[in-house]
Image 1 (cartoon, helix red, strand yellow):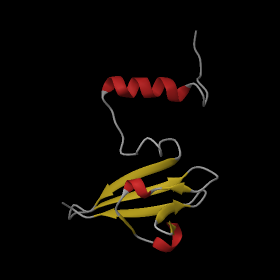
Image 2 (cartoon, rainbow, N blue to C red; image 1 turned 90 degrees about the horizontal axis):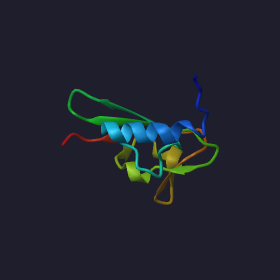
Image 3 (tube, rainbow, N blue to C red; image 1 turned 180 degrees about the vertical axis):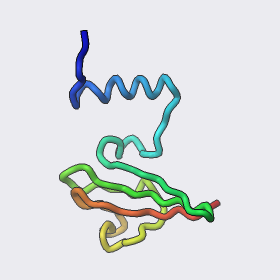
Image 4 (cartoon, one colour; image 1 turned 120 degrees about the horizontal axis):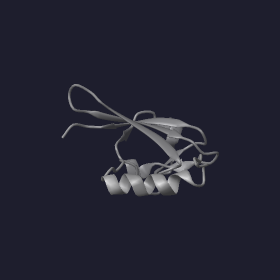
Length: 95
């Protein structure tokens, strides 16, 4: 027998397998499944987080910290709202 898990079945089993293997991610729980995150490091130790909103609604990415490199795209009165299907780059200084 075989099966192919759909969008509703895959997260449950995947989360259990990752936890059992001790694999963790950098996304806070409230952002998991809503945004995609890629992390790159510069030669000086500066880290860059590339964030993609995978939803059709604005997502607050303030929990990721760092310096928003294009604040006009994602800041709204102190919140960091990433627009629907929007992208952002956050810089985290070395140290």
